[in-house]
Length: 126
Figure (spheres, rainbow, N blue to C red):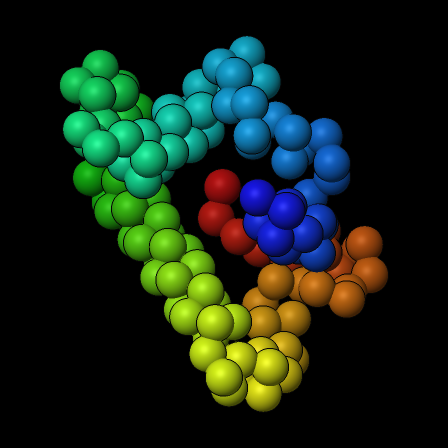
């Protein structure tokens, strides 16, 4: 989890925001935000899949297009995570990571000022 925390910090998350994400407690998030995070976590970590009650809350809280957005974002992040794991384990890993460094920094805001990170965060859909 240290790598993910570092990526979150580079993207502008505070240590408190990272702590909240790790704990994922209902009273720490707005309801829709919590439902989306809970659905994603259950989808990725539960061998038996998303519990029925969580699925019901997810489908009632989000329109079909919003559900698709959440699922697409989750799948993209998951694929990028797998890709980065593979790159880091390959003998070409260091070279590939150095090639990807600038494009990734542009997307995540890594190395940017606090105001640039806020602007990037504000440009992302709510």
